[in-house]
Amino acid sequence: MTAIKVPTNFNIELEFVLPEFYRRVIALCFDILIEYFYLRIIANIIESIARHNPNPDGFMETQAIALLLLVPIFIYHPLMEITMNGQSIGKKIMGIRVVNEMGGRPGISQFLIRWLLRISDLWMAILLVLLLSSPYTFRNGETTFLMLAAFSFLITDIILVVTSKKRQRIGDILAGTIIVRTHTNSNIEETVFMEVAEDYKPSFPQVMQLTDRDMNAIKSILETARKKRNTEIAEMAANKIKNHLKIESSLPPFDFLEILMKDYNYLSIK
Image 1 (spheres, rainbow, N blue to C red):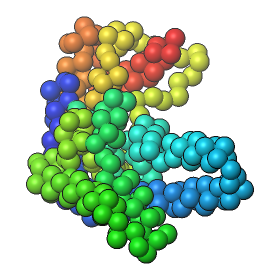
Image 2: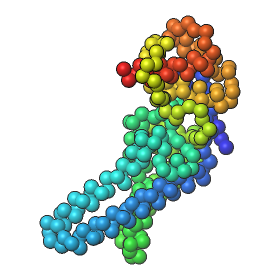
Image 3: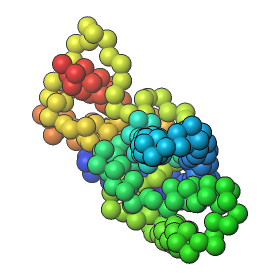
Image 4: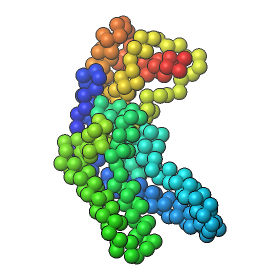
């Protein structure tokens, strides 16, 4: 496995494990299969509707329904990655996740950039439906051209993933994201947010000077330090944050960072 070091906003490097190439390929195959089966269901629904509406008005209605049913397939990746903290169903199965280049959760705009530049797998799912529904599909020059174009996009992404330092495809490079392995034995939540009691009393209101991106970095530092039982990383981060926010505290570094997380969560919803 290949690891990279990612600098956080607090000038502390975190180590992330990049997934093996086969994990990304299998995750992509799972997603393509999901898209394929959904498209097959849509095709059957549209065919059934068309049979019962043979008149011209019925044809227009069928086309409108078809477009509506196709919306989920087009927004599958951004919808999944935004709602599942950087994972699609395929990525979830294979234990990988999208993060930004600072190690935190990407913004919605970053997910959208990745989506706009990842059309190859959707094309392949659509063309797979066409191929299985009609054995003469590839006698059509336009369909053959589309399949070749889809493969060219896919091959370009594969070359970039294999050769680039951070294993980024073109969508990741432009969005400023990377794909890393996930660890299911984490002791804290996978996002910045956590449940805080309603009667919770924040200790450090200065934490609101930080951004969600800063808190993502703190969360990553805390998670890494706990996993490696490395007090030095946590102490270094705690000292930098104290100096930045002008906080005086004698709390142990782990406790200080966790209280900061709770304070931010409590104050950000007030």
